[in-house]
Amino acid sequence: MNARSAEEFEAQLRAIGEQRYHHLHPFNERMHAGTLSEEEFRGWVRNRFYYQVNLPVKDAFILTKLPGRDDRRRWIQRIIDHDGRTGDEGGIERWIGLGEAVGLTRQELLDGESVLPGVRFAVDAYVDFCRTRPWLESVASALTELFAPDLLSKRISDVERHYPWIASEGLEYFRARLTQQPKDIAHLLELVIENATTREQQDACMRALEFKCDVLWSLLDAVQLEYSKS
Image 1 (spheres, one colour):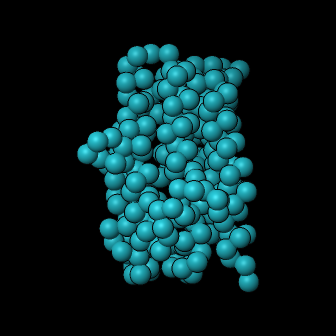
Image 2: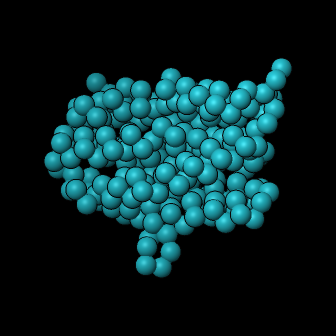
Image 3: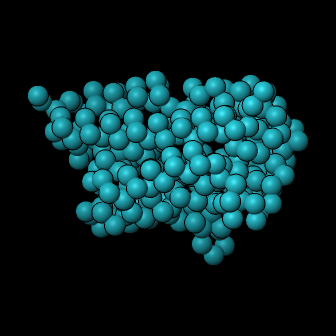
């Protein structure tokens, strides 16, 4: 079977997000509707942090496999954006700021002892996927970022409207990602569209993206089960 055209391939990748991205998860919908309790919101921030601290780890695995110097130079910025550097502590530190804004301590976030088993399993599976799978599939799994900018904008406005107990400066992580993600998305699409040149490769990239959607969904499943008990 012939490969899809670039336009058709991209459209099918985007359709996966429209159907399976975690903006459709009931917990996320409740967050944006303003119906989460303080305990539920803190539980999400605490557990999502485990995902956040593993983003530069999975990006480092991908970096070691990218075949071209120019792409490695561009990809390494993703690690810097999260781990930070002198003068700019990065996304992990900003997420700690969010944790402190919702009433968590730095130590509670960094020790990882309270991370739910389901969250740990999902995130570890994602890191292992990026460690073991071909670089093209690993990159394709990150295409969930295609669907994030609109969600981030909505999250900022909805949290400010519905959760006034959260200090506005705690939302700096999301504000920073609004300017970082367009460059990340452009590079992701370029790598996947240009290098998935066979139907088999395109199918593998689509499965990788579906897997990543499942990881994010499973993370919210675990948080919802633990913190939304009646």
